[in-house]
Amino acid sequence: MAKSVEEVRAEIPFLRTGIIYLDNAATTPTPQPVLDAMLEYFREYGANVGRGLHRATRRATEAFEATRERLARVINAKPDEIAYTKNTTEAINIVAQGLKLRKGDKVVTTVLEHHSNLLPWQRLERERGVKLELVRVPRECLIDPAAVEAAIDDKTRLIATHHVSNAIGSIQPVEEIGKLAQDRGVLYLIDAAQAVGHMPIDVRKLGCDFLAAPGHKGLLGPQGTGFLYAREDRLTGLEPLLVGGGIVEQVEEHTHDLVKPPQIFDAGTPNIPGIIGLGRACEYVLEIGIERIAERERKLTEQMLRIADLEHIEVYGPRGTEQRGGVVSFNISGLGHHDVASMLDELAQIAVRSGHHCAQPTMRLLGVEGTVRASVHYYNLEGEIERFTTTLEQIAREFGD
Ligand SMILES: Cc1ncc(COP(=O)(O)O)c(C=O)c1O
Image 1 (cartoon, rainbow, N blue to C red):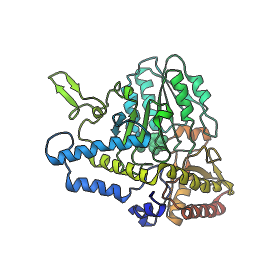
Image 2: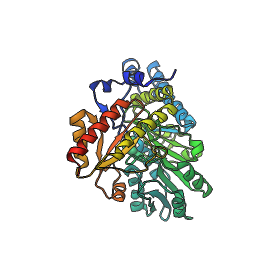
Image 3: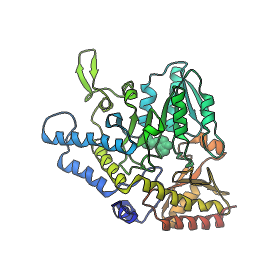
Image 4: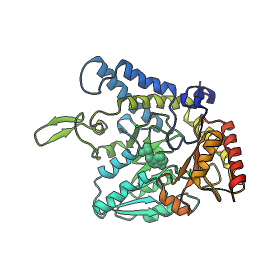
């Protein structure tokens, strides 16, 4: 039986504080079974992985490695195509540094990216003379695949776009971009930070070469976890960011041979409890059903979007929920975004985020300094969205102009 909203809520201790948590795009609260899996590791077999023969290290290694299979199930990949990281940012940096792009090579991305999918490419531009082109997008914040295609030339090695915008919520046409990348023989990286766990993802269908994602957002895993999917043949070509203990076959005084991927990305002692917790979190979202999560988030978002009809409120991005994830970004005229967020917290214990959402070029596109962002997950209630809407209406009525 799939888990109901009430069951999930009862299993998230953080919600007992009475908070109305609408900041899921930043990070999500952790369910008890995920906490239990981590505590079990600490209490019963808290050994290091891959180094030793005693039973605790064997059990730790087995539990640590099992997460690859679970992540693979979530995105329809193979376990050996999954490299563990500490977050999405690290996953993108592995690709940026690991591809060994050279002067004259071109990377195509967009003005709508999170800084984590922009700065790694800017660094290549500055340090290696890689050409970086940012595709423009209209105010609706939807990427036009034709504009991406127009940016591809014979020097283009990689396209890097997000799947769902964290700042606006728009869902991008990643499958179409994946197809054109394949047709043009260009690599494609998807920043799926706001998509994995929130909606069904099939990397084979998306036609991407790389997909970067966090464990600590849609998947309800712990902070300090994330992963990089790379198609089997692509992972082999990537250099790890870190080298050192735990990933060697043979070391001489001046040379070394490293293990094969994906373990090649696990230099040093990794986040063992975090990765074990992430494995349990994958099972947890699969128990709820990712289709069900997507469907519920769509309904909650539709309900949130009613604020667009309120006086003094401007909502950014597409109006329909078909092209939207569970994120709604807005401003109240005459009020600063931080003021609105503080008022929601003080008046009704509603947690939202305010600011530029690590997407300053997106804010420039909209002509604003920042926005207020409310974001949902499966466990949020219609009643919570109602409270959010009425509190916002009150704020807009009293202070909006
Ligand atoms: C679209 C997007 N990309 C990248 C990131 C960075 O993710 P992480 O904090 O896991 O590195 C985020 C975080 O909010 C995001 O929303």
